[in-house]
Length: 136
Ligand code: HEC
Image (cartoon, rainbow, N blue to C red):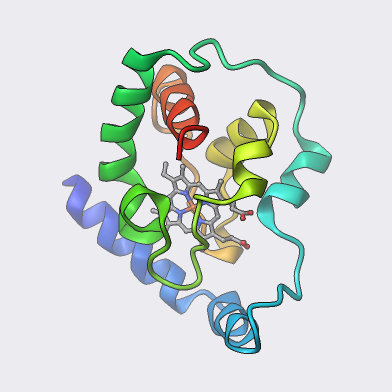
């Protein structure tokens, strides 16, 4: 399947996910989060890991490209926020998240909440995306 098709199916999935409307409602009511954020939830389960590419320019650039292709459709260009219920990724909680937590999120996703798994990407590419996330 072409990536564009996969992406549109995934987005469809997040639109029809039962949590979607609840999430939209919660952001409509003053932006307060009723449920725990995925970062917070994942940090309880994720093992500590260190990012092999942390802060390395070459990998930030590679991560930016991957982000544009894999994530921007939901999280917006440069993670500035996009299609509800996907939250903006340019935010303190994501910037301060442990690398192991972000790695856990990309590996497992949270389909019921509308966030797909990216376990199909090589581990190296997932670390490049995480390296980029830290620079948002
Ligand atoms: C199909 C739409 C979609 C795509 C594509 C997508 N996400 Fe998400 N993502 C979501 C949704 C929806 C959530 C919110 C889940 C929640 O809060 O319950 C989320 C949550 C997250 C979170 C947790 C944010 C927080 O505040 O807790 C991170 C980090 C994240 N995504 C990173 C990524 C990265 C990196 C990519 C690309 C590799 C990506 N996402 C691709 C829909 C998507």
